[in-house]
Amino acid sequence: MTATEPSLDVERLTGEQLHALADALGELLVDAVEGGASVGFLAGLDRATAARWWRDRAPDVTAGRVATWVVRDGERLAGTVSLAYADKANARHRAEIVKLLVHRDARGGGLGRRLLARAEREAARSGVRLLLLDTQTDSPAASLYASAGWTPLGVVPDHAADPRGVLRPTTFFYKRLGEDGEPGA
Image (cartoon, rainbow, N blue to C red; front, side):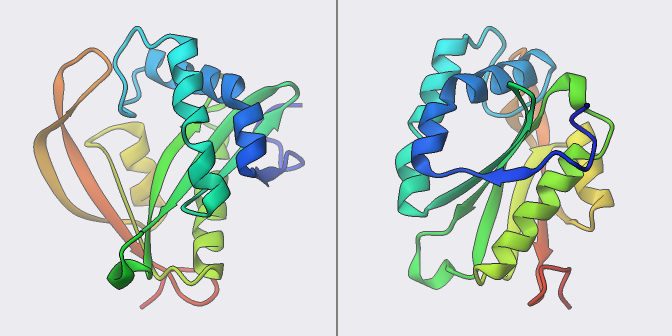
């Protein structure tokens, strides 16, 4: 069975589950960085540091400030996505898609799109009407977001370093959600 087969479930994690899966999530994060994804870390990211980063997210998941989903491919995690809810009183209608990661061996079969769609639906169900995200300009992720109906808001030159430390432009995207989790008006 491959990670792109529809029988694999997208599972929402509790804070306790995220903490327990931190090593596996760390492996997924290291794979993304080694594959060139600009996800906030530089090349040479070690598994212990990556796992610790995930463990540090567990309290936010437990408190409901972040929601995280995973897809398992046997013992390995094939992908993950998180949704960070706004904490300001005037921003409760919006959230941010963060750390959409798909293992390099599972890419190209729609898993990233499935994870993104799940986060969008769950965001709408929780009352979120506006989603935001950012990604490296002209990356495969930017292509995914554009093809999934996200609107580019703008590009900031030299916004973030890629894993090799080279400053790259970042494209900011948004998506309005309707009551059913579909793009709104």
